[in-house]
View 1 (cartoon, rainbow, N blue to C red):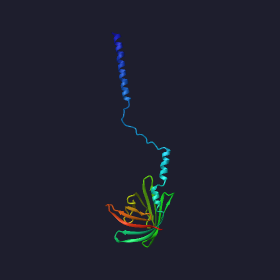
View 2: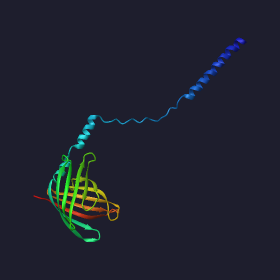
View 3: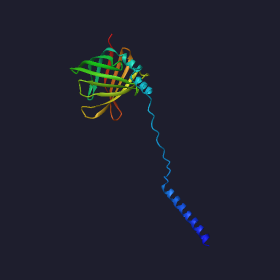
Length: 213
C-alpha cells in the first residue's frame, strides 16, 4: 500500500508544480497589441537636394516675362478717394530692371503727387517653389510695406495680386487687390482696389504706363 501511495504523491506534486509554472508564465507574458509603428520618412539623397536647389535658383519663363519690362516708362496716375467724387491726377516715371542675376524685378518710381515729390520702390519675384508672383511696395507717402501674392492668367494677360496693409485712418488691416494687365509690349495698366469685408471692391487707383521709345 505504501508503495502505491508514494508514487501517487510524487505524481501529484509534479502536477501542482507544473500548474504553478504555467501560472507564472501567464503572469509575465506581455500583451500582444495591434498598434503599428510609424515608418520614418526617407530623406532625399544629395543629388535630389542639389537638383531642387538648382531648379529653385534658375530663372524661368516667368522671370523672362518680367524682364520684358526693362526700361523707362511714363505713368499717368488716377486716384479715387472716398468722399471725393472727383478723381485726382498725377504723373511719374518708372524705371524697371532685373537684379540679382535676373531673378527679381526692381521698379523705381519718381514724380509729383498732390503737390509733393513722390518716390516709390517695388520688387517683384516669381517663386519657383511656391509657383506664384510675390510683390513688395514702399514709398515716401507712408511708412508701411505692402506685400502681395498673385498668379498670371494667360487668357486675360494679367497678374492679379492679393495683399494686405494697415489703413492709417482706421488702424485696421485691409485687403488690397492689384491687377496688372499687359496690353502689349509697350503699354500696361495697373488697377488697385480696396476689398471690403462685405465682398465689395472699391477702385482706388489706375496707372496707365507707356514705354519710352
